[in-house]
Image 1 (spheres, rainbow, N blue to C red):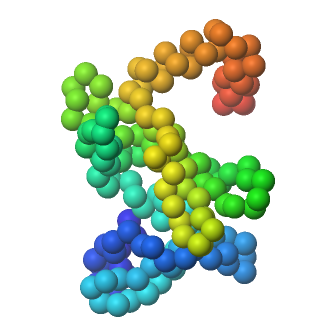
Image 2: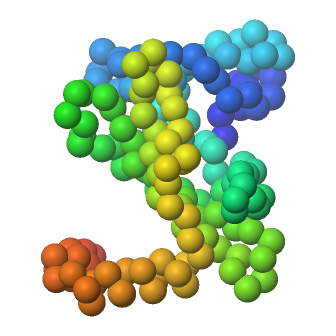
Length: 157
């Protein structure tokens, strides 16, 4: 959690510009709206701090849940130097038949320097559907099957 060290109030979602530190790490400035205390934290730490927060999907798939867990991978895939952080979330909904969903999305530092969530263009499905998608695609496309085999092999090492 990114709570204020001074008053322990959790600050609201910040819209402060992200900066690159002298050590080469992206930093998210924080400020407490309650007591005015200001501090900084690494972007990756801030992204992880969202675990436990409410998640809302807008129509057509309107639903509410909780961000149960998250993995973050810094992506160096941008052709223009824009920093991206790929995110895989485990979201829990109050649906007894499909409680746990996986969402793949990203954050980026936009042209104004702000950290922006890219979940509007993400894919989120129940875990059972992910399994079906991965198996079906692997059966259709050898290159995808090879990727999954490489992943399993690497995990076994």
